[in-house]
Length: 207
Ligand code: VGL
Image (cartoon, rainbow, N blue to C red):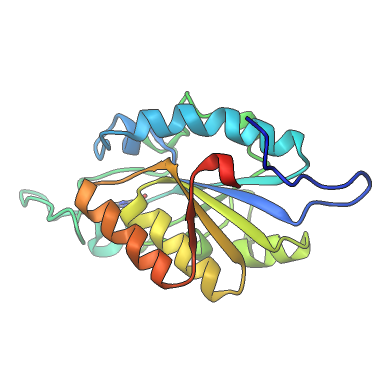
């Protein structure tokens, strides 16, 4: 299962990191549940354990809403599921916690986003423990160059995170079998858009 993984040479820090996007209860089984989010969570766990064993860095992002402007549909109105959403991932709530099938112990640092605004990209986030620490700077400080992006949802936060990573100059691969979309069609479209932007779309055995 680890075949094809480059791994770091002994004594040399790996320049590879895995970004696990928003594998949170609300996106798996809660107010914004995705049809395949639980499968993705189950597959991500052995993958990130292997990554850690190979010396790679593994970080997680969390949607972390307090009052995110117009991101939630107004009370009494239906969300459009494109720009407005049901209430989800309220800061400190069970819905915002990592899904139990994700091995949260394999995540070295959490980055939170969206307190007071919609924030689809992990690069808009800051370290859970220190609001001054942004994701890009954190990765650069560790010499990270290659990123694998996995998680939920392919057509929203995975896409936004991967596109920002590519814009920032990282070498980005999205592992599609470790992602879950809001809609099948949206997921396929997002993968095409990411490929167009120079992001590799692979399966986890090819990272
Ligand atoms: C997400 C919809 C709304 C995501 C976040 O994590 O992809 N999707 N907020």
